[in-house]
Amino acid sequence: MSAVVATSLSQRFGSDMALDGVDLAVDAGEHLAVLGENGAGKTTLLRILATAARPTSGTLEIFGLDAMVERRRLRSRIGYVAHAPGLYPALSAAENLAFFCTLQGVDRGRVAEVLDLVGLAELAGRLAANLSRGAQQRLAIGRAVLHDPKLLVLDEPDASLDSGGAELLVRIMRGRTAVIATHDHALANRLCQRTVELRRGRVAGIPTRLRVVH
Amino acid sequence: MTFATIALAVARKDLMSEWRTRELVPALAQFVVLALVIANFGFQFDAHNATAIAPGVLWMALVFAGLVAFGRAFAAEREQSSLEAMLMTPASPGAIFAGKALAAALLLVACEAVLLPALALFFSVPLSFAVLSAVLLATVGMAVLGCLFAAMVARVRARELLLPLLTLPLWIPFIVVGGQAVQAAMGGAGGTSQATGLLVDLDILFVVLTSLTARFVLDD
Image (cartoon, rainbow over the protein chains, first blue to last red):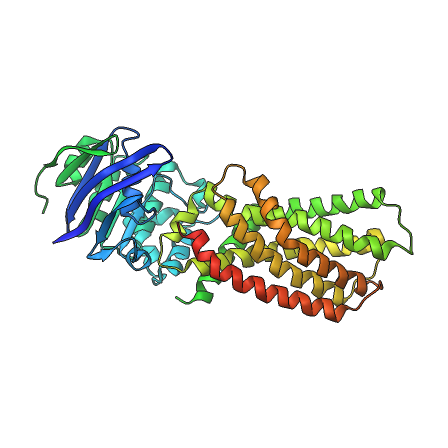
């Protein structure tokens, strides 16, 4: 069963075509890597899949729901790590997560669990502004899984992560459907069963099946 | 996860951030005091015309302080890409907006706590409950309108220019009616009760209008 079905997704910014008729299907539990050079349209595609942006044309179904209509309902099932961490610098790591617990309607007891999951338990009280870039990225990843989403949309989540970052991504993606944009082919190979490559807003060639991950 | 819970959480987060960074309120307080100092030197006033000049100076200082306070409310969120993270939750955009407007209004009230005593000191005008209530009532309506337009222009490059262009025309009723209420309360012509009643009406009108439109402004 497909968790994500995108049909003819296009996104135009003025005269620039960022996405041009992208068709994509991701099975439930599958991990898909989106590869491509800078400006290929990866971030635009992921923003649409995460319901953070609306496409100019095309349709998108997530878990059988029309993503253009049921955006708010779907957002409780989607965890999104954007390009920028989007944290509150004057709040501590724990306070950042606690704030998003309220917005997600999740019990605050989840904060400690998630900080432990992303390896920031010891930095819980440190202001986000004083965290290293890698720790900020871990916190952003933690925020994305705070509400235990069924679908993860990760835009270059490995950016700034240290050598343990790949292990963290394996942990959070386990048991979930995931779409991940990355430049790192080795990471894509390790985390995902399938890759698609974007070139100038179009899917290039035939999606590659890498291996079956159990 | 009620509307009020979300709004209060957002307001608390903004106030806590301001308390820790002290980015806005100290600068705004200095700004309003400087505005009063300049007006004090610029206007030739005496005991007879102080009550006519002081309300105008008060609203000028308040309007410009408000533009800065409300402009920062959403610009900071956009700059640190945190607004999108908030909107990616199932929380109602209307509740998020209400929380932002509440925090911005409270920050402006903090500035008013400096502005009003300074006005009384520089212009030797009386401060009364009627003055205070007129200023606070106008703050409510100005906050919701200011925050709505601040949210609208936050993603635009020329937001510092656009925000006053959009906001000031709609703030004029508050300035006119609030000015009348303050002038009457300071001993000038007119009655305060009618102007205060009109401020309440304007607040209700704009709170309802902005709460209906906020979700379309925030949600792409």
